[in-house]
Each structure stands twice: as structure tokens, then as C-alpha cells.
Length: 403
Image (cartoon, rainbow, N blue to C red; front, side):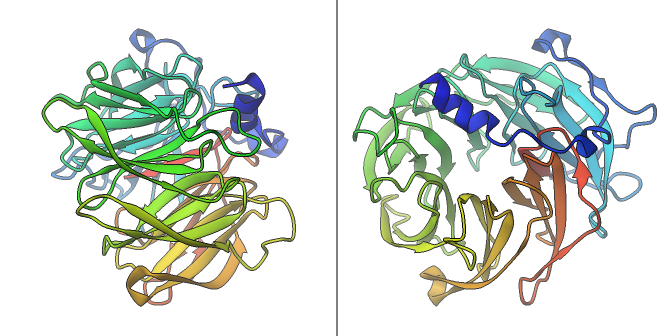
């Protein structure tokens, strides 16, 4: 990966408002895992504590919210931001910072809700695990590649998958009974097809488990989605198919319809969304024709980031960086069609990542440029979005993980 390309990914638009700096969650300096700790307000907001699903509300009804950032960016954070939110109002309160994790730009939770995993998006990339209770770091491992930018946990909780933007590949790490990570058991680099227009090589941007259990890796640099079979005993990967989209699409993010027969692929570079057929038995993806992302498409430079689908499969939402909006779609024909409904302001600048609360009634948007996290109420009937108060200030907010 060239230095210029990594800079484009990490530092585009970091001239965020000075006003956000004045109100960020209190934080401490960063260091390595043995030196980790928490630091914040004199009386931090209590976080939830375990429960059968690790998502029981705290004594005041608040639930935990973890915030990813870039610690190496000017004005960035000092680790993982700790906060809590009210599931009824959406109001966020700060609870300090988990220090000692470098550039934790993406976070994912274990299915039991007790352990969170973070990338360390640096040249010598890392993946780490920390317990929700405390919180406390369980350990840091080499990711096996450079600039890991996405990770996910297998539904059975036994394996962690990570995507490496810099070196253009994916890795598998075992997860033990405590939630801690072992050394990687698989490391695959995308050597073909050749990179797309303007790309210097492969840039894996996401890796997920699809319906049916196959591993799908989205590579922006090669305009390809790779499908792998994971050996559940050895933790190795074997490619079974690949789906290519038109050159210059720059696929960034893939989201599945709950029916399992369709998926939606976001094109970061050509500002599109593509509805794909999906075979859960083989994991094969069949991309259709790309469509513009929303009503404001074509009005200026826009880089769509992430798409979410509601649990009932009725609506989808797309974060647009550039237009700084959230596009709402009706999902029709059993998942085979996205119909544009509207676009609403995202409530901040450069919405890098969006996430639902576990019950689907709130949508969180992490805004990289404005250094804020916006919260929206989600109408269950029509899918409309309504802002839930003022955005919460958090330095270089690039990921929000509500539990």
C-alpha cells in the first residue's frame, strides 16, 4: 500500500470543528496493552454488566456504547471511547476512555455480548480483545497484515475474521473460552484480479459471515467479492467463488437481507448500491446492475460508506460521506429491489459508520469530520428517522458500537 493511499483512507476530512474538541469525552494517553486502563470523568457513567446476552441495562437503564477513533490523527482519541446511552431517548453520556489500544477504528462484539474486538489500523496491524465489564484488555495480537479496517465474529463465537486494507487480504484468529484471541490460523492475500482504475493493489475493506456460513471478503482495490469456506476445526480458508463488479466501483461494504437470498453491495468510488443475488448453500454472489445511491446523487463528490437492513427486512439505510445524509430505501420483492424513499441530514460531517441498537429502535452515526455521534429514532412502521437530540462529541468518531 502506498503512503498516499493509506493517508486517503485514514485522514480524509480530519479538519473537524474546534467546537467538537471542547466537548470530547475525557481521555488519557495511549500505550501498549500491558499499560491499558480507563480514565475519564470523576464519576464515570456506569456501563452494563454481563447478563445472559451481555446486554442487560445498567442501574439507570443505560446501555454501553463503545466508540472507535484514530489515536494517531491530529485531534484524535486516546483509545476506545466509553459511553452509555438511554435506549428510550437515545441520549449519550460519556464514561471515559479505554487506553492502550492504537488506532481502534473498527469494533465488533462477541455473540455473548461480553467481549469486544478492535482493529489496530496501523502499518503493523493488530487485533485486540477487551472485556465489556471493567473494561479491561485481554490481549493484542498481530493481524497478519497492514492497516486492518474491519473485523467480525463468527456466529458461533469461535473465530474472529479481519480485513486488511493495506496488504489486501483477510485473516482468521481463534477465540478461546475467555474471549481472548490466539495467533492467526489463516491469512489470505488477494493476488488477483488486477487492481481497478486508480488503485495500487488489493484493499480488503470488509469480511463477514453470510447466511449459510460462508466467509465473504469485500475488496475495494480489485472490485471483487471473494467467497471462502472456513474449516471450523483448523481455522483455514479455501476460496470457493468470486464476484466481480464493474471496474472503478470500489466495493466497500456488503449487507445481507434477513431472507438470505439477497445482499446489497456499496460502491464507494462510483457512488452506487448494487442488489446481488446470494445462494446460501454455496455462498455465491451474483451482482445485478448498480443504481445511484440517492436523491442527491450527482450533485457533488460522495463516498457512500455503510448500509444497514432492518431485522424484518423492510427498510435499508445508507450513510453518505460528502452529501452527509442518510438515504432510506424500501426493500421490496423479497429483498430483490431497493426503492428510494428519501434522504435526511446525517446530523454531522462525513458519516463513516452506522449501527442499530440491539432492539433496532435507534440508529447511531459516527461522523469522522465533525467528531460527533448522531442518534436517530427509527420508526418501526414506516422506517422514518427522527433525530434524538443533539449529537454527542467524540474525537474523530469513525465507529459506534451500541450494546
